[in-house]
Length: 458
Image 1 (tube, one colour):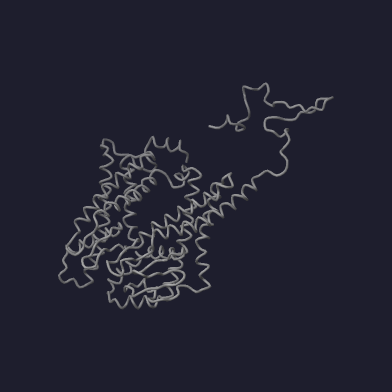
Image 2 (spheres, rainbow, N blue to C red):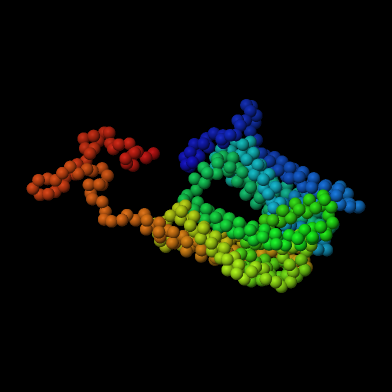
């Protein structure tokens, strides 16, 4: 889909959007965004409050009334926005399950699509305005909920609610709004070749590491499945409580994958102050009674067999190599020196992205020994950017060199008789000069055949 096609398409309604009924007034975009934000919040709150009610019914709740259940459901919804809270007597709680972000993200995606259709947005350049119209009221509603859910025992962070609500509305709502205008394939075609190749390389690097991290985390949990099951049964949560606990652990699966990615990069992660889990070994203290942590036995112990260590540490370079290969396959460069530089830049961007995600995957669990849980964001960004960048730079340089070598014509240049627009008619007798005749001479009005020259391009 070309830019001109998108502009032409922008003259009307987006494809697949119903025409507004005749006579209905067109609402301002901010009003449409506020309605969508309120609907997304209401749907999300309904889901988490039902889960909170199920836990309240299953567990002994002497002295705990329905207002406390509603407040707990609101806090769970805020946790889904990755909004931390402070627990009296314990301290700040910032180690939150990233899997819960999928619920508000999916609702905001649908809300962004609805804003485009209901707000008569028909141009790509207006997608940012539509996302902002959704994100601003959504962040305000999230801040109001954070303030209303406060009690003497627990309080959510209002500034975090504003920032996280705004970011989620812009990202998820903006992606949904853009998708409502055109399919992803057509939107990607509008991106220039070089930025598209960099995005492809970064996505490939992160995807390879995520797949490796999921494999490592799943293998570690499978090897300690008996300990995890025993710990699950010792909690005595009942069948409803067990279901809720399993859902909570599923929410922490993305955190576990990111921790495993940090493990493969080298910095590892911590489960408490002064602890470390890295390819070289682990040093841990007593762990919380959480079944997922059964894969990490406490004390000082090796994490992987000695023969497997080099293979795990080589994974970032393999991921960088895949990204560098796709970087050149998507958009080769004519400069031999530029290809490694673009590879290094792609690796640095991938490392920065992993560092941000790693920072969000951890956080404090109180103000005591567990105040440091998870990987260090800046260490993951620095080490990951270097390792991925080296792998991508070397691979991109080699692949680009061979691509240029294959594209180089072999042998001497073709004779002039093969030049487009001329044909050899013979030699002038006596001096051996070759005579060339313009095949279109005397027919200037008709010009060259269709598609033979620049005049045929639009």
